[in-house]
Length: 395
Image (spheres, rainbow, N blue to C red):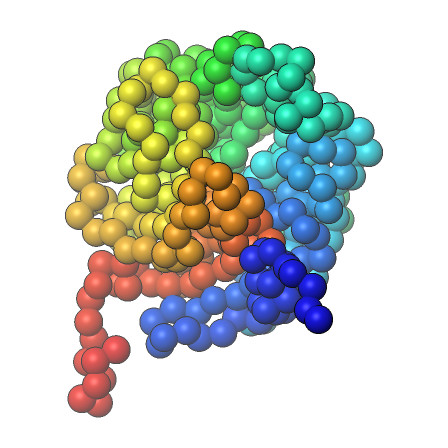
């Protein structure tokens, strides 16, 4: 007699998370980064000056928001085709540590920034009986922590605090601008007792002294627009793309003074499901956006949390993000089993994209309900759909 197992348990046993990169279909390669944890989420990547690629994410054997969620890292060495086993780089016993991002400073020091919030001490159902409005994640208690490595992430210095303001949250790294300023996008997560974090709003912090001190600047009209992903356009012009708590569309805002003032975010043509996005400038000059190509509603004032988090899609823009003529699904996912089957809706979520020094694109994201982190390698041409001929065969 076989024990009944959930889809997630079946998938965990079926997918070997060895970290080995394997060619798939002749046009891309796939790896499942090693993990020994049940919860794996919010991965991000950085290519270091030595050519290694470092992945960081939050992991644990409990759900997001509980004590025991910590930051881990895995390394893809420059001369290797296999990810290393994960190493823990944080471990606060009373806080949930989440959303890590990496920044290699011009002096070669590697910054690891992540959030740390009071841990949830009851279930969301129990909390809902006591507090009928709002959400229960404790994100409103978060601070942003900082660790610095001087040896490419093999060892880390002591834990410091980058932002001690309650509700401080991050998802994207520091950007060095062409005038030498450092700019860091973040947002404040607020528990207003009414919406599920629909009152969150975005800011940027700017340093003119290489990270020694910071000044905060608000992004007006950014209520419900978070996870700002910055693109530098040159001469002080910046573009920021936002996740929307309204689950309607990705939003965009602009600055013309190196981030000191911003336009109010407005909708782009790309959908958003109130889940993470990431935009980068490619070597070709195009902007690449990775996101879930689905949405949950059309009211920009609403706060929605649709269960759909698939497919993982990459879109390319040739006009600074005004139009997106090229779109390709990196991972179609499994589909949606309905609101009543929350545990069976295997999400493919929080995607991140990186272009390495050779021009290859790397995507990582939580797959199949956070059982692991999937890594997919592909080219810009694959997204565009260019066909190449070799020895009489189309590739």
